[in-house]
Image 1 (cartoon, rainbow, N blue to C red):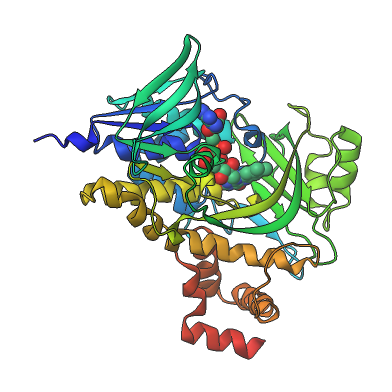
Image 2 (image 1 turned 90 degrees about the horizontal axis):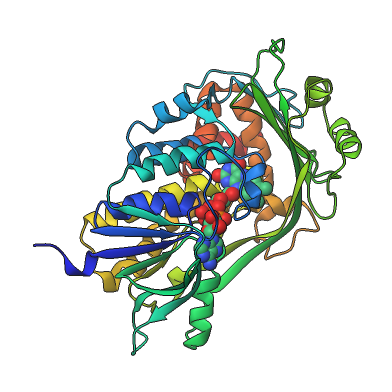
Length: 440
Ligand SMILES: Cc1cc2nc3c(=O)[nH]c(=O)nc-3n(C[C@H](O)[C@H](O)[C@H](O)COP(=O)(O)OP(=O)(O)OC[C@H]3O[C@@H](n4cnc5c(N)ncnc54)[C@H](O)[C@@H]3O)c2cc1C
């Protein structure tokens, strides 16, 4: 018998969270409609709804695994589309204070490097092959439609090219990157607002794409320069992307913003802790202008702490939790959340309980990437509630890094955690913790 409570789902937003959520839901609902305010390009191209997409976007190994679970064969799709396969620890070199570079090792973990527009285009192509998903473009959702008793959401209102539309749905997922619609509804219905945790980093990025010289025969494909915190927050990512190019993102926190003109941009690159990236790109031909982006804070919305939440509504991706982009986690966490949603729907969790179970189930997934954000408090100007044991945690991190430099097994474990393949708790296992403490 078809489940009548699962005939139609609406997903708001066709970013990485919306696309992956739609795929997960399509396995359990008769029909899924994604509503997106932008026109979606057929190929990999920037669009106004995701301005951050022109900056370096790492897909972590944990995110790749989640995408592979949602779209079997996804790795092949990426490779065919021109994404660059790279081994973490070996092909992407890491320069960090005290280790320039960090020991290079083949840890056996592959990732794919590409521009964010290419990743979205490949994911969209897979969505278009899913029979029961439909994407409505140039349509901006303006509100959620509650039931008379305000206990559930029954649909959305949106502005289409032909005028305002009301669309009924059994499940609405806000994947708008902002959560504005859910929070507006809470305000209108006078529901208790979710608590928010913020870590104020005032981060500024500037990025450009350059041709990757064929003659570049260094032993690495990409290079990361970590800052000498807390004295300076300046860092850089140089990643190989499709079409034999490099995408370079540079940035700083708390007012140390890279300039948007090329001469100023190059001066900033030259001022980085090591000359590796400057030397690699100074003669490379630019393919794009310099683009900039500012992010005031990381934000986590604690829907899991609310006593009740309207049935038939969920928030996912950045709408729920927005991470400091330098750790490259947002898209991967969104895909992992979609995998959890898939599991809950497969378990036939009733619609009345879905939000509660979903928000509870994803907390472990969010805990590791959010735990990494604590290192932002190394800067005195970072705003937010500092953990009482901050100094101890920072020292632990430094000692763990030292240990990882000398021990391939520990190195592999730290990479598995930072790639979201293992939880952060793995770095506190008693035997390892004892070795780290001894170094501290
Ligand atoms: C500078 C920068 C660098 C980053 N680097 C990385 C990285 O290396 N790795 C990583 O994993 N993450 C990175 N991130 C984070 C990543 O961009 C986000 O986590 C990810 O895009 C989350 O996707 P989302 O789908 O939740 O939101 P978004 O990507 O913001 O997508 C939201 C979508 O909703 C649409 N929309 C919004 N409102 C409406 C509406 N009312 N009606 C209809 N449609 C609507 C938008 O047009 C958009 O398509 C970075 C972020 C920044 C700012």
